[in-house]
Image 1: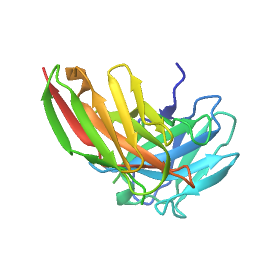
Image 2: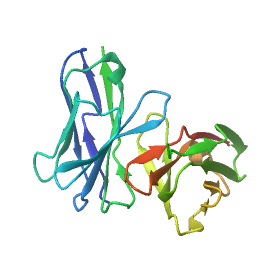
Image 3: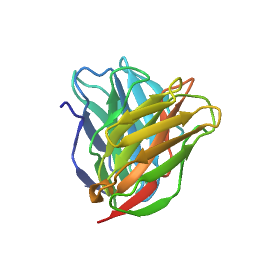
Length: 113
Length: 111
């Protein structure tokens, strides 16, 4: 069964460094998302992406964040200058259509020191 | 905010019993989805129920949706120890597609 994959599974970085989290959505899906979950807290929506542009973003998704679909398979989340509070699990998701089931990847645990 | 809020926060039952978890939300929705998360792992999609549906089944799972009360319930019948996980409802508002999650119900099924 097709699944969303994410790399790396765990990323450790120093505060102020840039990180890129990578996702490979399900191949025939058109909508892509990033969510994050701070340890012990709710899953929070960050951004949705369709047709090579951001369709929606939350208040968390500020200028430090950017997303890109550099080729036909990858979908990336970049954090330009990481802060301690960016430490969280980051989940990528994809759906075939706008109001369809969102399938989640296994997540990347980001630790900012 | 349209995010779902689950109730109870934690539920502990014996294997074989049924588990019922509830979700309430605030605004009109297109869909409501239930997910399961094992500790420290990814989210596994369980069921999507659309705003014009009232009930859906999938194996031992039964989901109901009452849009007049802005609430949903997830029933797991004949629970197993492997059902131990956190269960989240997620809603998307009528005018956008971003899903908002509740804080989840932590279900423990004792063997």
